[in-house]
Image 1 (tube, rainbow, N blue to C red):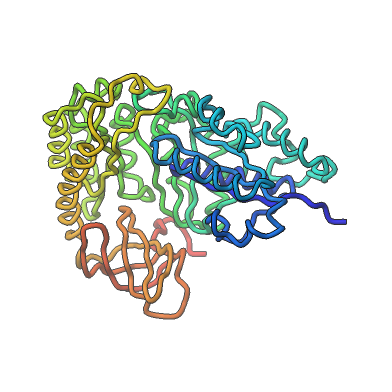
Image 2 (cartoon, one colour):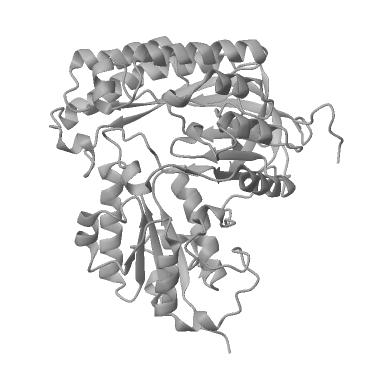
Length: 476
């Protein structure tokens, strides 16, 4: 007799780390015999046919939440409210950055069945067994946990072999948590202190991805370049991964300037498999605002790092283009127009390929929560627009350097007669599909024919699977 175990659906908000965490949650639920809902329309909670059917009575929906911005938080409130109102029989679980906030739990206590922090999956295990006792009767010997369940407190959730949602690009978290306590950021409170995975475990996961022909491996961490397992720092880990045989790209997110060393810059620039892409958040170009943000560097120190990065790429990869991206917050408490213009000055000096702007959003529990949020929403919007105009100029000028060049492009999706993919510098490329063969997930050579502000256009020169092969590697 088939057990009537529930099905599940995971709704992910926020950053790449949350996306990666959801892959591990999915593997965890699969381990207990639960099946993922295949009907993708179920993410449209208010209109889903599945949610309106009798099948939804035996459904668990997990919200993996983000608390970095109020907008993301409000989306969770709205979706949980509508879901509970229209589907009272469904089980709702909340994890991620909002899970431990007392005010969130109070607001949603009548609508959410379980709150648990992502690093305490054993709480989810106990809840599952309590609500679905038949799970205890399952034979769980062959599992992603290697005959262990998460009731054993010493197991790390990062050790779980994930259920990768993508078949050619994979996120690999190498550390989690943060020790920096930037005054605007909830991550140290939501994630806890920094913990790094053993290099041996990371390398094992990556070797498995290489065997499965994954093309792009992205290392993740809230402060990825502070990685250390006691024996290997971030540079040492990059060198070990770069030395692995196989054809793949390697990139990483997200860095903190205070942990960027000369050794790291040289390693990144010299490593053949590490993509020519460097993301380095500055958050503000004004030293007083940086001090209030508790960022531990000055604008000039940041610029010195940028200059070192540019020199290293020109020295070790003079024939390759590279890209620089960053993050800037506008409207931090007390930021004057003059201080704001220092961020504009930095942007003109660095000449970024991309900047991810954030309008300051007060976060409960942080130091900045107690500061007076005295920059109006209208002013924040105008400041972001002003910086975005500078970005448009530098982005277009940088993109024009690509025209006429033949580059590697990883094709990620197809719409109509076009493929869409990325270069090693993380530039978006639109490519004309010239044949019926499916090239999604393949690295191909593309000649860039046009440059736009936010993307490039090109045509396929040839498909290639061996372009990363090192001189001492053999063809398979």
